[in-house]
Length: 217
Ligand SMILES: Nc1ncnc2c1ncn2[C@@H]1O[C@H](COP(=O)(O)OP(=O)(O)OP(=O)(O)O)[C@@H](O)[C@H]1O
Ligand SMILES: [Mg+2]
Image 1 (tube, rainbow, N blue to C red):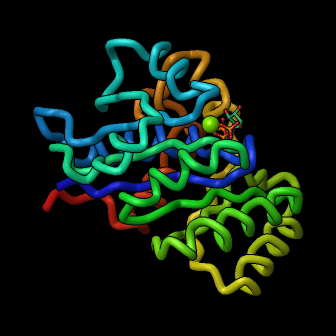
Image 2 (image 1 turned 90 degrees about the vertical axis):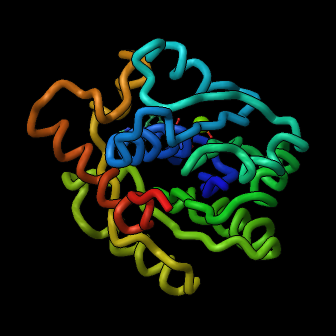
């Protein structure tokens, strides 16, 4: 039985694909099994996950597949992996795909950014899709740039708290190394060593630790 984690928000550009790939990479690294213990499933018709996976090629550390077939998505738990991370579409039109994923998900991670424009779509996804299906979820703030100061971050945290949503303490900071990774064909565990790389990796590791993903059963 696999633990299925859905990364979802019906808004483009909040970091679903980035978080999916990099959480899978750090969890795979921590589990360090001979056979792949982690599967990433791309479900977005835009196939950005697919593009990234093909750039990484043979060096990809986890198993990877692409499907939006509801029958397959609803059976992800039965697969022989420890963790399955599912990247979902960032649009309202493909809500049927998101719903199929959530039907078999153990939890959902909802990325939000410190741009107030992302608040309403996060609210829609949570209140209209995730909560009615009863899937436990955690909101994770992504793309925060310390150089922009703390005001936007504090406003985002205040919004999440007002909603009463569970929130990850970890804030995933904005680093160019993350945005270049797909084009360069790497995942965060493969970044060339540097202080920035370590900080960028640390955010993902912290989130994985908070979410309790680092163990086999
Ligand atoms: N923490 C981060 N630091 C820097 N760049 C980031 C970070 N998170 C995401 N990005 C970049 O922001 C852009 C949007 O991220 P991503 O593609 O992961 O979002 P998405 O939610 O999957 O979007 P879509 O709904 O369109 O699939 C990408 O260019 C990505 O590289
Ligand atoms: Mg995406």
